[in-house]
Image 1 (spheres, rainbow, N blue to C red):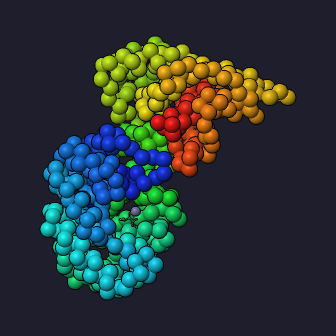
Image 2 (cartoon, rainbow, N blue to C red):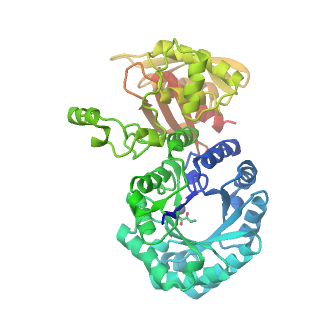
Image 3 (spheres, protein in one colour):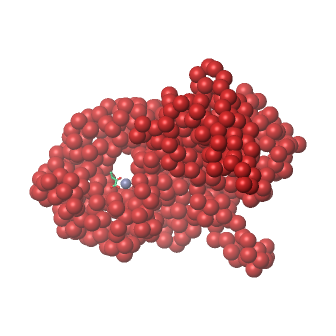
Length: 498
Ligand code: KIV
Ligand code: ZN
């Protein structure tokens, strides 16, 4: 008999804790709707007590989606739990995810407490939550480094108090796969009431073992996995949804399945990457640009004779349409709309009408427009602060002479032109902008990324700037890399000076 593994998606909670990748409520709803289409069982929508934004995101996601259970995170604190229950009031099925640190590190240093007191606090929190919502999941934070005997005691107590899902986080990503599997097995064998609960895995990727640990947990009895799209999350991230789903799909003999429609994996991967402005590494398993690219002659030869020689997954199974139509300057609106929908972007008629001339403009510069180009085009005007915008840019640079840039900006309703000097065209442009806004804005981080390969390609620029001690993130994309950098800088500066 086949057994189901429940998919608990925490892209909008643990995933969203990545610095510089915060989403607004509208964007979160867009992701949540797509997670529903993907077929996840649970959406962890936020940590309501942490901010009014998180609270309203949980409320709005509860209203916007129907099928998945909506989950809200809390500490083992009554106020947190009350606020979470309130945020979940519109959820068709709501779950509170409450818990406490159980490792010696957490007990001694974080709580200055004792093992006995931690059990009491866990029980109290679960009971309190159980009176407010239909379903309670308990997490034993840093379970990866918690002594198994003590962990079994905490878990038995949490189940006794009413928790029906038990999360065993490897919070620091330290545990080895065989140790994590042994931990789950220990709980299955030593917690008397374990049959009343589902064990959940929650693994972090600090040593690159999140997926291996999750799999080991499943093979030893866990039936829920906590994952994020593209593996995003705190520090090195969480277990990636697409990897676990495709492992179980590829290894059917294990007798395990998920309800995820794997064909929707690419669209959601792109959506999350675009909205969070977090590029997917090209060699990322399943969703990286190179995951299905064969470059060596030997591989290409074998692949052309029989695809399975070098491909264990059919790209169509993850929503990659290899035979997709090629978009050029001769493509019409219908072809553009069709391709956008294939990659998960739905536009209204006015939005398509606005996009089409920009699409043609880019298609004139580049021979073929690929999916990444489209995503950049669609995203371009999002979050742009209109109080500061680029009107004109001209740079002079070359060998043995200092670069100069003339920048014309619209700023607070007026137009300003300044000339800046610098050690290159980008530095000169940024100095010109600084002269216009007359503020000390420090460039902290600057990443240039070419999307595909040609010299006529779009370049994406990610920047973060520091202003009065706070970091602001900016993004720009253009076939002209200096202009893309200026746009990214202005995006960040616009947010800083708002
Ligand atoms: O990593 C972790 O321990 C967590 C818990 C709050 C579930 O994210
Ligand atoms: Zn976590």
